[in-house]
Figure 1 (tube, rainbow, N blue to C red):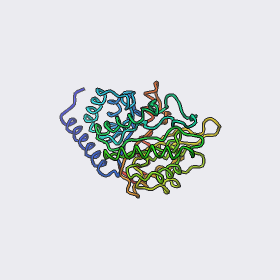
Figure 2: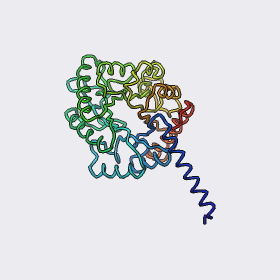
Figure 3: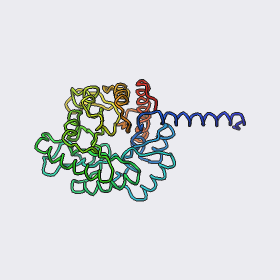
Figure 4: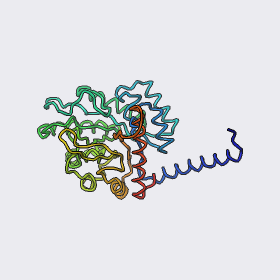
Length: 328
């Protein structure tokens, strides 16, 4: 079908207007709105295309490259990833690494210790963690980000006898990162020793390093029965120590084996509208990144389901931002 000159001019004007709108939104958004790449697709190019073209984002969070952990990515894959980021004009919020998502030596074996984590934690033993951190420091410079995510070892039934050693290792890593001008982000993760908001507060108080900050994940905290991530947990957290935010939602379910299910951002027990308002009120200006986890979208393959679920959840996230009076 041929296109008239008038139709072509109108189409070009609409495209230019859309580009200006996205640019204006990027300038007015108080956060670095992002998405974790492999929640869309294991294909890094496709994930970046969706993030930039369909979601209108300027930021992306990197967890894996073509199905490989950052720790296992080849030099050629890293080089290709840099070209793709440049092609779509995307900046990197942080490296969503699996640092310290492993067993703590000497401690009882955690029942949370799988051979392979569901959400792309590399199977890296404790003795290789220092080497992993060095590689992540180099990669952070390569990708132009000042943030590296970590955890604090698979969850123990009783962490009190081991907490001092856990904190020592985290502080040691934070000090190493500080020498390179980097921030170490501890994610509150229910399968690890800091899972809830109250536990996050304790570890932040115990480790005063200014570059040791929290990757605040209300959804993860919401998996704990009785926990109220927002407003109760959030209001107690030191706001200047929150350096990254993950967005997903959750509902609690009855039964001994499964006590929660992931949900799209706008459905579930987390009050994201209130949380977004509070983040803006408190001057938070770092990343707000979609970590979908929910796989309830349509599709004939797992990859298709992941992408459709992330599209649905991103729409829910933006709806919550809109209700909070925030344009991103």
